[in-house]
Length: 449
Figure 1 (tube, rainbow, N blue to C red):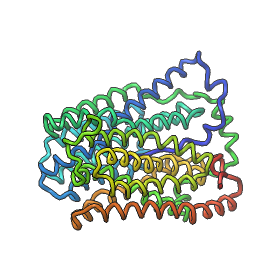
Figure 2 (cartoon, helix red, strand yellow):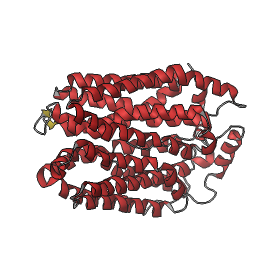
Figure 3 (cartoon, helix red, strand yellow):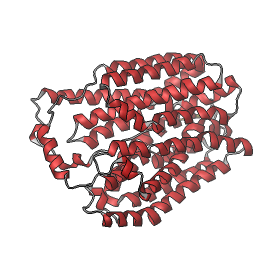
Figure 4 (tube, rainbow, N blue to C red):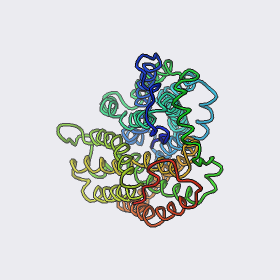
C-alpha cells in the first residue's frame, strides 16, 4: 500500500520566465530537492513492498497463523495512510529536514528492533506501527517539497517522487531475498534497517523549503487564474455523498492489490512457487516482486495520462476490470512460474493507478486549494483495504484452506467497482458539475466521454 498526492491543476498553467531562469541559484537547488526526494522515497518503499519475503520465515519463527501475522502489514498501512491528515498537519509545524530525519529514525528503529522481537504483539508495534509512521512522515515531507519547489511542474515532480516509491523496492528485492536465505530474516532486518534508515536521515539533511518569494510572479498569476474556482475544505468535502462513493470504490479496489502485496509469499508457496523455482535463471518469487514494482511504477503516470484523454470513469472501468481479470487468471494459471510472474505484474498494473486516478478525480471535484488534505482523508480507504486484503483475506484462507474463494471475492470487488464507476459515479459527477456555480478547474474534470 502506498500514499499519493494529486498534482495541483495550477501546474497546468504553463511556465513563466521566473520559472525557468537557468541563472537562478534556486533553479539548481530545486533539482537537488527532487533528487533527494526520489532517493528518500525509494528507501522507504521496502517496508511495504518486500514484506512478502519475510512472511514465510516469520511464520516459522513466531509459530502463529497467517491471519495473525498479516495484522502487521495492516497496521503498517493504517499508520502510514490512515494517519495522513495528522502527518500533513505535523509537516507544517516542522522543517522538512526535521520531519524527514525523525521519519528516517523511525524506519531504522522499526526494522532493527524487529530483528530482536520474539512476540507477535511487539512485532505489530515495531514493524507495523513504527514503520508506518516513519514512511508516512517521509512521504509527506517529499511531496510537500515538490509542491513548493515545482509550482510550474507540480505534476511532474510529484509524479517522480510517487513513482519512486512504487519503483524503489526493485533495488532491494533480490538483495533482501538473498540475505534472508544466507543469514536469516533477523540479521537481514538489522542490516537493511540500518542502511535504509541511514539513507533517509542523510537525504533529509539536504531538504529545505524554497526561500520566501520563490517564483512569486508565477504563483500570483496562477492564483489569479484560479480565483474563480471553487475549492472545498475537508469538512465540506466529507459532507458530500460523492466523496463517500469514492471512498467505498477506493477501498474495494485497494483490497485486491493489497491482498496480493501481503499474501503473495503465502499463496506462491501453495501454487508451488517455492524458493527453488526459477524463471529465466532467477528465483520466481523475487522476480515477480521486481516485475510488480515496475508495473506499479509505470501504471500511475500511464493511466493518469489516459484519464486526461479518455475520461476518469472510463479509465477506471478499464483499469479495475483489468485487475479483476488478472486475479482470476492468476488463480487458474498461477502454478506456472512464468504465468505467475507475468500475471502478478498485470495485477499491479491494474491496481497501482488508484493513486493517480482517485487524486485526479478528487481534485476535479473539490478543487486544488485543499487537495493534499482532502486526499489524506481519502487515503484512509487504503488502510481499510489493507485490513480486508491482509488479515481478513488470510483468515478466509485459513478457514477454507484454499485460495479460490479469496481470489474470487477480490476480483468481484474489482468488477463491481468498475460497474460503479460507469453506472453510478459518472452520472453523479455529471450532476455535480452542473450544480456548481463555476466549472471545475482541472481540464480532466470536463472530460465526460
